[in-house]
Structure formats: structure tokens, C-alpha cells
Image (cartoon, rainbow, N blue to C red; front, side, top):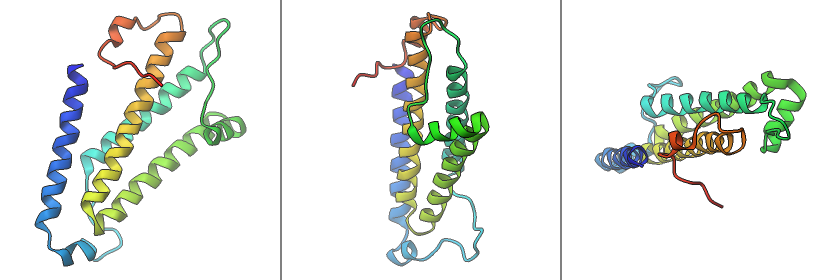
Length: 163
């Protein structure tokens, strides 16, 4: 629970920092691009790296779950678009799909950051929170259904996900 609180505190700190940095900019500076060239400086490097690492973890866990051979149990990809790529091109298709989505989000936030840095940081933080949810959900799914290879007490810091 302390790890989750620490993560939430970090997100709150990043939001406050983004709000303060955008408040320092003048109204005209918000409307004009931050750099003159097409390939300007990369902003939000730490958040982008965290998003990339979480995406790699999601891909690894998804591949791990799909390859499990547990009697009377088979994990399936629940995202129909990702399942299409998986069915037609196996794990290569899944890699292309997942990292295509990562590239889309990263490029989108970099473009938005040129005009509205606070909004770009919110989009990236939302993507990070969603990836954390997916990774935690996958770990809990495995712990609940795969025969206790990961003991429940080792995942006790992860809050229960209820629908």
C-alpha cells in the first residue's frame, strides 16, 4: 500500500510541477511552438521512459500469459485489435501493435507539448496510469488463476481490482 501511495504522490508532484511551469509561460508562449525545428528537444524524458518500460512489461507479461500451459485454463488476449495482430502475425504482430501504440502516444505528447506542456503531461500521465493498471491486472490475473506460482502475500501491496 505504501508503494501505491508513493506512486500517487509522485504523480501528484509531477502534476503540480507541470502546472507551475505552464503558469510561468506567457499566453503567447503557449500558442507558439517551443522549438523552431521539426525535431525539437524531447520533453518529459522521465515520464516517456517510464511509459516505455511499462509497455515492455505489458508485452512481456502478455506473452508469458499467452504461453502458459495450465490444465483447464488458457489465457487469451481480450483486446480485439491486439488479438487480430496476434492471430495473424503471432508475437511479431503483437510487438508491432503494442509499440506502434507506444510510438503514437509518445509522438502525440511531444507534439502537444510544443503548444500546451501541461496538457501533454496529463496525456502522458494518463497513459502511464493505464499501463500500470494493465500490468497490475495481468499480474493479479496470473496469481489468481495459474495455480499460485506467485503467492498472494507477495502481491499484497497491489490493491484489489474490482469491477
